[in-house]
Length: 89
Image 1 (cartoon, rainbow, N blue to C red):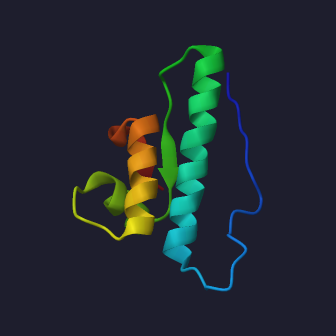
Image 2 (cartoon, rainbow, N blue to C red):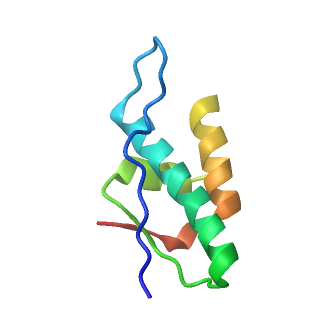
């Protein structure tokens, strides 16, 4: 079984401009939340995440002290998914 789900717009509506890397991190956070809901319904642990952003993978895999924005999203991703599930495309 293959289930694909996506969300089109993820950029925050604010005055401050956001970098591409941060938008990619928001996308990864959204994917982690969606997969958590889906895994709860279908009782499966066989989940893989793919991204073309090496920056996001580095943020998720390393334990460095990131800024508040990055750290909060990385913490949420780590809580919802296994770190080793992420792969680079």
